[in-house]
Image (cartoon, rainbow, N blue to C red; front, side, top):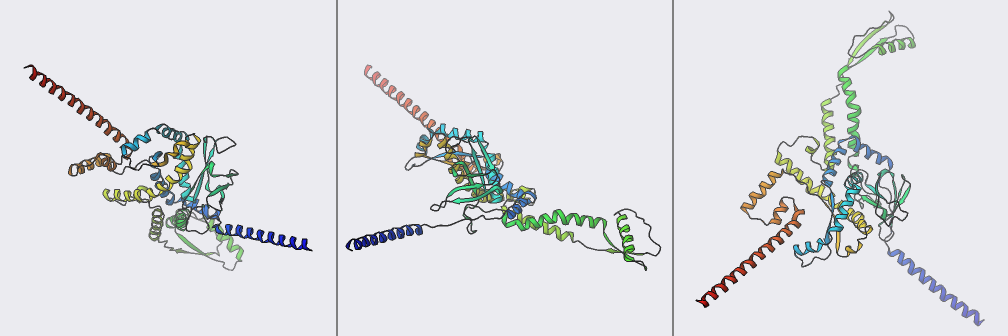
Length: 455
């Protein structure tokens, strides 16, 4: 009896302990912010976006914007992780020893034709909300070895994105064609607004075509269907033939009507034989298609689509801005606004998902303890080179500028490194000249002192 009671107490303690463990585990699970995601768009909606890009000015405007974003191309640069209390010359001196690794990244970009692949992938991400560039290195273990090919998967072939329960980062992406499950180590995943305001759409992205899908469909209908019908109506006109049966049955009257309609050709003389009893009356119809109002409506839709991408209309062949200064001002705002924002968006993605991984696969992971690799876009020149140089020269005459500031105004920041080197060389030459002068002065002093003693 005593043994049973002891066993019961032990069992009770184990039950309490197990309950406590389950409770603490449940509390740990509840402490995580769990979520789920689902596709932002149906395949039908993606088809609308594809048609809008392919058949309307919305696609032309978006293409022009992305051409400005990529510009002269993208390239990697190194930045020191710790550059506190270092002068610009000291920074460049520390970065100089990594030139070999930097050139390896640049050459690998050229080998992979990376700029063109990035342009296509980023455009696709803007149209559909996301895109994927797959690495193909022909090895079973995708975590090692440089990619041999870059393969852009069409956005409509991308399926479910699985996210990590703790970090909400991407775990893998299911792809329909080719049939594959891609993990982050073997792809560049580009999402336009990965955390868009659309609920439960994390990592599925947001399409730039969504806001103009209705305008694009209406525009396409006007251009492809309404305009041809209007053109035919305005050229040939429309009439109504009234044929009286004159006591005959409906079938015979309908036969005569079909014969007449089939024989009439717009813009030509027509003749046909009918029964003597038939009486035909022609009524002309004035449909008044209001072509002027329809053209204005088309223009309004076009403005909506172009405005959605914030691309200056003059870049698309709409010569509305006759004033050159006004045009250049609009293009500057365009570059400093949406183009700059898109460049920052892509730079963050490419720095981490491409350049950092390539460095690691090249075996240069140790340098990441000293530097970070960052994607940088080539500058875009707005004015003619002569006008820009002339403006900087005039400004320098009024207010003398340091050389680094002149390079910044000329959009030649990439030559600041050369300027530092040049300044260092000039400093060395100046110091050498000073030392030589001091030597000569000492020699002259010694010579004079000697002559005084002799005389």
